[in-house]
Amino acid sequence: MDFRTLQYFTVVAQELNFTRAAQKLNMSQPPLSNAIKAMEDDLGVQLFIRGKRHLQLTEAGSLLLHRSNQMLSLADKTRSDLAHMENGLTGTISLGMVEGRAPYIAARWIAGFHEEYPLVRYQMWNGSSDDVLEHLARGLCDLAVIATPYDSEHLESIVIGKEPWIAIIPRDHPLAQAEGDTIPLENLADYPLIVPRRASRIEAIRKWFGGIDREPDIICEMSNYIDAIALTEQNVGISIFPQTTYTPNPHVISKMITDPAKIVQYVLVWPREQRQSSLIQEFLNYVHDFMEEDRMHSERFHVRESECIVPEGAEIL
Image (cartoon, rainbow, N blue to C red; front, side, top):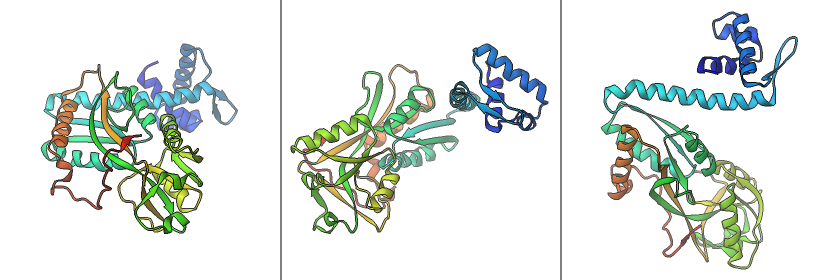
């Protein structure tokens, strides 16, 4: 099984028809069919159920399609990086990150780094912390911005920010009508809640409520902040998420959760034992200096909204 055969398989899996796939690959059908049959013999599995007019992926075929997309993407990135190694600091930085404030922070690194190294290109991917860490482990991204906790034994890190947990409330909800921009945790215990879909995070939220002898009514778990906002504006529940960059929405309001307040900490991580390329190492050096010198709040960058003040003494959730 080589990259060319993987490419053949991927196109056939997308088209589910040997004739169309052969046309797309600019080759005749018999060699393509033979290549797929040889791949099945090599792997010892059936990849397609062959009908008279169309194909259907088997369970093994579906798994291989998922893995082949990852392998082909990594191969393309490797070719690009190798091709640029002889031309100074160029190449592509692949950055996975959680939603919320992470892209807001990373955009400022990239803006500054781009001024110094204009030939560098970037690939950015969003997902939950667990999804991003899986991409990092598979070598599909170079660096990752996640929310703690993380495996500090196998990952190195730079702390890049923290923010308080907030409640995102439908505008016509009784809790939204109360004065002030904070809300005690106790007040949320009687309402259905939408929370981040991360096992460690859900457990932490339950312990948070347990500290006031209450049990949260979790109605929905979400990995996507924007999806949580959509559910909140339809009065499905109140979302508990880290405070993030301002997303204009006239149907919801946000209040910082207090009594007790909690914060989330963001870190930039990379594999501890993996030797970094000169490009990635230079980028890490830049980020380290960026955070040390607090360039985040310099006049060089435009801040769209005032950030929540992190409560003093608030513990990490």
